[in-house]
Image 1 (cartoon, helix red, strand yellow):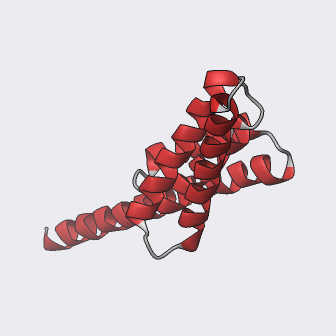
Image 2 (image 1 turned 180 degrees about the vertical axis):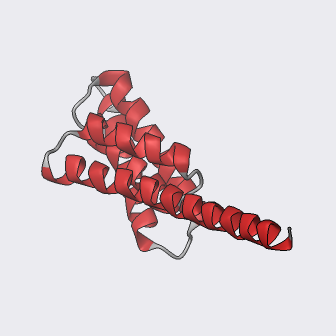
Length: 131
């Protein structure tokens, strides 16, 4: 009887730690796939979907947050008008979140600077005299 309980306990621990490892690999795999789509194939909307799925698996992950920011900047560059500004503002929001999660990572500040720059360019173009 004691051996059965011990075996069941050890089996439960094994499955518990295995599930955590699989969970960790899933978001990393999605990020890897998203990076390939964004950087090598320039399929930014598809990459965004991968990063959003990874974010659901691992919320509050700075590595995912800065990639979401990158995706929204890239998508914003190919959109127009108010949707362009909305994409740049979403990019800044995700960069800000990445900074809060990992203030020691320079990539987070880079992503925020890029998003801020796009917002500034967008707003200055449309607020210039004669526009």
